[in-house]
Structure formats: C-alpha cells, structure tokens
Image (cartoon, rainbow, N blue to C red; front, side):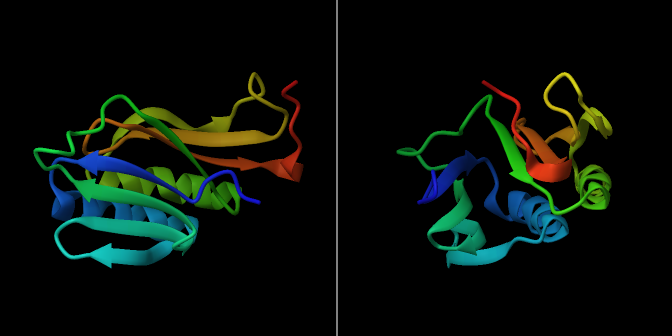
Length: 132
C-alpha cells in the first residue's frame, strides 16, 4: 500500500501555478491525471497517487511554508527540474548536487515555487535508505 492517496496545496493563481507545475512535473515524468475546471489539477501516476494544486477560495486558504520532495528518475532529471523551475518563475533554494549528509548517493535540487513552497527533486543512487 502507498503512503498517500493524494497531497494537495492551495495556490494563489491556479493558471500561473499550472504553467509552473506542468513544466516541472513533465520533467520528472508525471502528467496531469485530474482536472476540475478552475478548481484543482492533479499530477502523478493515477488519481490514487497524485499531487494536487487547488485554487485558493475563502474556505480554502493559501498553503504556507510547505516542503515537497519528488522522486526523480535520474540525476539528469534533477538537473532539468532545477533549470525548468528557474525558467518558469521558481527561485534557487539549493543547486543540484550530492547531499551525503542526508544519505549516500542522495542527489537533489531545491527551488522555491511561485507560491513560496520549498520544492525538491531527488534521485537516490541505488535507492538505499540509511535513516534509522
């Protein structure tokens, strides 16, 4: 069983965020799997394994100060994620590189998205987990 069915963040401007997320998720190999017009867009492998962006409304306030880490299929896709994010309005929060303090073979890049979220793409060579 997977840990999540879906994860959702609220964004200030759905169309602006869509432009950013369409580009970034494509680089990581994920596509749109759900859309409710003017309300929500879901990316992932299915509606049972997705990340959603939802338009802010009075009953759904903006999500703040969130860290998201997406699995990337290769080192090159982490690099491309970083470059694509910067080209689409993201800001650098950590250039692509190995992070041995996290885990051996952990290669990641960090950006701040158009709503201020810390977004990471990570590839772990060998997919080992050295955390307790």
